[in-house]
Image 1 (cartoon, rainbow, N blue to C red):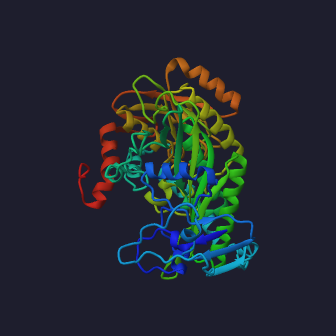
Image 2 (image 1 turned 135 degrees about the vertical axis):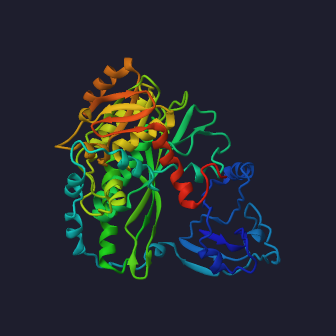
Image 3 (image 1 turned 90 degrees about the vertical axis):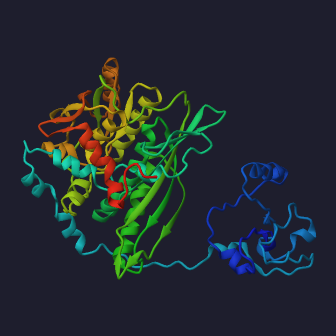
Length: 488
């Protein structure tokens, strides 16, 4: 290809070609356009008020050539953009020599650096510090967990974020069907009857405990959120944030997380279409925890109304899909509320995820259920509470009815963060159908209680007023910032 730096739009005066070619300015995309469709693309860019310029052309030379002031002189479609204030228009000449001219095939032949990587010696000790035993001692069967639920609802990860996101316009030309606060954002595609569902997730604590499992879990959760909206997950992008790659333990974390993400995307049939890696995130010699963030986008084929909301309505039956195991390692309850930061993260069963996602996506798309909410940070108790807040409706559930894998205490049923679980709000007439479809899909399912009233009640675990629980959840972040919940 031939590239002309004079065609590159710039904000700053006096930028030289090296600066133009290596700048990492954000919000830019490169498109390769069929010549006969160039006018159509430029018209589309103008309609959306996006600055677009023709900066290059594909050639059969086998060379990558860079010029500075050539295209206007030899009639390449388009024109040089206006220079920034302080710059003169670029000089153009038809006989300019390239300022770079290299074989195109050589551009992929950069050095391959094989940094040493090694599982750190501290990993075994970290994983052996399972928080289950000390928490079981503190909260045996019959313990009142109301205070624990209130504490969880006040943690920054779980607490209401509306004070933050309400300060920004998220309407997107009035295409927003489900905005911030839902499991996945949903944006309609005007004129098509279709919609996009999007979710981003990160699991740094899980990745610290076991990077490969953490990499799996972050993909599973984002895909589960998209499936809950009735969408088919289609693609994933990532942002992989790690410490100093010159440290063998960090390179091991990176390799393991990438393998975990890759395995999961292959199992779920989700291609990775883009992403970036950020290394050297450290302060005073301390590396950050491995923090992959992924975004999954899915397609809703027929958007005939808003997807089932993560909210309760009086009279609905509450169901849980997926099995709960006594998995507290890396959980919000163990790590944040009680400072127990060791153990193993939840098992990332990819087959179970595939079965659940297909079932939940179909139930939601067909409106066979009235409400859908995934279980993640804080576990089942927090998922139920969030649905109660969204619908201004309490609930009564029996933790003994929750599908479980292995022996669990009421506290573990409430606060375990086992993967591949969702809460459903179902009209009574639809319960038998949902149970039958779950059985057919091989997904554990059970009716655990009813929506209604003004209290959050889990038999044998907690009983708290809806208003008190919601206040703890809604006021936590404004209080931490020293503002009121109604501040702009």
